[in-house]
Image (cartoon, rainbow, N blue to C red; front, side, top):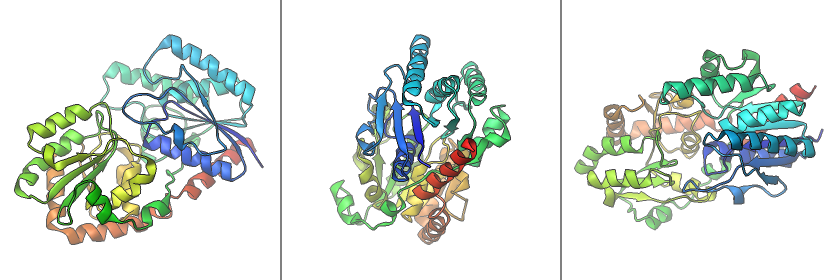
Length: 383
């Protein structure tokens, strides 16, 4: 049965949830559904995925759908979303991200859409927020959960944290792993050419990080952790794939620590270039403070690149200590340094764990598995 499916996401910047959403749109289009994607304005150094929207997807921009709190704009945004939903008449409204999730669910529920779904890609409230703000977001999510039929999550950690906060009921939660373009990360690329293009030599040990350069992403922790190791080992190089509001602050720290001439920052790049860059790394480090389940960790595992990651939210569901990678406590610079040193001292362990990691993720994180799981969920809600 062909469905009319409307996805709503706050910002179509370059990020994990946005990439996930576009793959979902593509997969649903390929299954014969009519698919629309609504998003807010895109600006700033975090890039835009507007040009990555697949052909055949009806893209609509809602000018008042912005991330920062703005009560008047939010009121206007909800009215605009109601109008779009009323005119487009979807069978399913599927929201992504906090602001779009709250306003989109309210609008869809008011318009009596048959199936209202919200994917929890990451926690909208967390321990790094000031308490009043965290309490507010909890209350908003409790309110929105009563205005949707299902809450897919990318990791069990998301479900458990949401339920502990009183958001939704157990029967609303469904595990739907993030889908990846598995073939892109498993098809060998010319790693030597990629490394040479960024100034790396064959004898360099390239430690990569792929994420926005932003607060709570841990780039500063990585710099502090690796600085003593780089002073002792001339081979070590850092490759940061991405950009963001904290780029200049992190580069200033790199200069202060004497690492700037051994750090390469690519800026924002098309998604098509990420597989070859990950494959060119000797180690992928993901030092983030909060994640749903980091796509880049799975992507590195698909490419059989060893991983060091922080124990943030759902990360440990794929990065199993001493089985598929190295997992360290959040914000623990000493533990991160020890994990990096262990990789340097025991490369055979790293490679063994990378092979075990690839076996773990190669079937569970496919695009088809994700889209099929959503198809099953939609059919259940619409029955």
